[in-house]
Image (cartoon, rainbow, N blue to C red; front, top):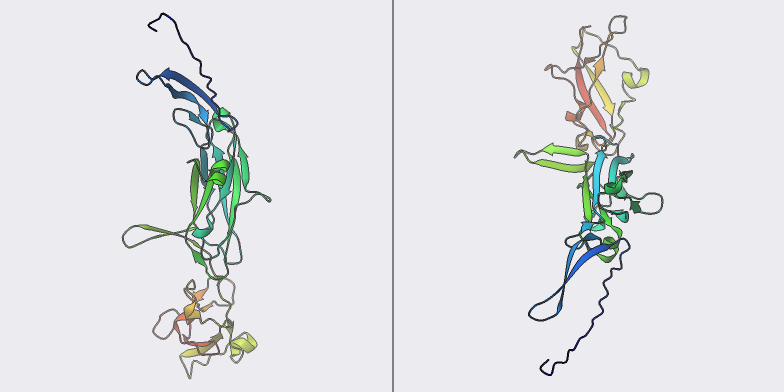
Length: 289
């Protein structure tokens, strides 16, 4: 000062972070204009949220190791094998989950291990290993076809506090169809088992498990089967055909032959008219055996 005295002051600064495992290397500077402190983080590690210029403690990774089979019956679970890992610089807890709003049709999704969905994942950067887990999907109350399912792996604190960007996702599906424009259409699809049909009890096939041919009076045999289901065969989307096959009962004749109509087309009962009692009739052209 002008009178030759000197003044000094001291300021105590405490730097801290509530997240266990966070570490920071901070440079402290004086602003030349305002004389205030300037802090600049230059290194360290952090999470929830990840701070600039530091290594992320949490870096979730989720991938599908093995997808479900393309054909899964409606009463069976669809199984997906997943691999989850923390590629970050420290051990941490993560949550495996799916969004309820993404599942309006009630597909049953099980992403839990035992009674919890929280995973403590070690840092693969420091030698930790990835973890394998299984997600099962089961048919809901109404539909057989659903949109693909997104499964998320997110930092536990980010999940609970809805902050941070430590999140990854995997998309589950078992059907892929190429559209006319070349785009891929993916879905979750459960397959109806083939419907049961039976020979009409009024026919000789139904009564005696055999049939009689009189080639002197006719060239075709009228055969009738019954669909015991209340859903007509032509309404079953996954069903392509219901045919008739035969072979000669003799050694050396092991191959089955498709039954044909008079126009030589293969019999497909699904294409024939079905009455209100589920009976369907086709004219079988006598085979030459």
